[in-house]
Image (cartoon, rainbow, N blue to C red; front, side, top):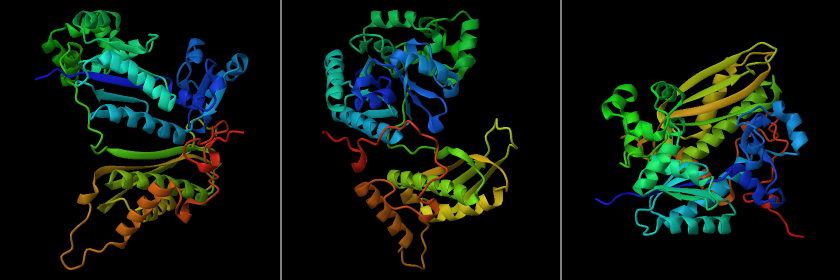
Length: 418
């Protein structure tokens, strides 16, 4: 049985890199990207990290520092980030038949077939930079946990590539890597290990397997095996069905009008239904919620309710109708609502969603409509057709005062050379 070799490809400071792609004058300048509603920092350039600004810090706490250091800020632009991500991932799929997209900016690829992994990674970095303009780091190892470790080291290297398939190199990196940095080891597990004077990845991987099993179960054992070079952690294939889909967003201002709240809920459902159609899956049940800001000076209120479908569905009309009924029930007059959201769970393949009726011909007009919506989404882009319930002004939309254009997905926003 041949030994597996994995490369973990991680886009460096991805959201910032996407913004710099269309604003190259910002290279080597401090840049941050803010979360939905311009709430907190979710991406930082290296220059910002060097200033000591932590991830997830609220924007209002660093306004003075931003002004002092002339930091450029952007509101999050997921439409742009998703498109750039898909371009990077498509290149990876050209290089390997086995690609697991771990996150929007990160993927494991099986490169067991590559004779010279180091040179492959160097060439891959050049290719992605040339075709997408995005810098990447590549960590190479015989297991996924070691590839994660190698990638963390690669980010600090000028070459952007670290390969730890050599046994002596593996042991050296394990000694240099603190136990709290190991992929899959959380805060509580770290506290237990440190209390036992297990401080490095090397210290952890030499522990007795039965002790690890007793303390941390099968998850801990698999992490240790991975660190030992035994491929023990499997990843879901890209085609596996996820457990849930969530769409939620804070409002750009406090909302008291139920009609506007209904628009936000309808928008969330349209987004979820689109994803259900795209992934060819249906939902068994749906949850809807609205709530005020937790730390607001006014009355705190929240409403939450669930809908269970007789037959698993991806029908945007049915989902919207039932959600509107729930909102009518949970809405309270005079309350300043700050956020709404919808989630669907119990997801199954759409082929298993239809109940067979022996007495009727199998012609489902709603299924034909869903298929038409999917065709329109593919041909003309999302939101080309929308429910009237969603409205058109989106008064509830989150604040995104510094959002960049949708350079790659909107004809009206494509840059023009003058």
